[in-house]
Length: 100
Image (cartoon, rainbow, N blue to C red; front, top):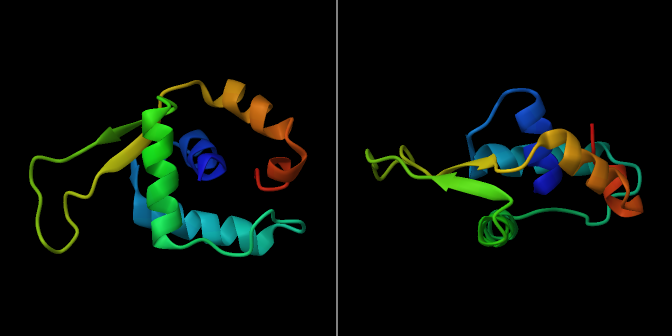
């Protein structure tokens, strides 16, 4: 999830909601040769986002205009510089293969 947010932020596509993050994660895992996990569920993404918000690596933004059809979903963006985070993630052998 963090790798996805780094890629999305570098592409100037943040803040972004969890559905886009989940789809980006699926694409990353499908294209990675040695993915550390096989698949990612909506619950996996939600847990990861909550943990990252708690660690203050990302910020959660909630719209004041919420609706039952998904409008107003929380959106997420990084709180730290992408190049610093990318360097740290690239240093991890398992995560480096997931970075675009």
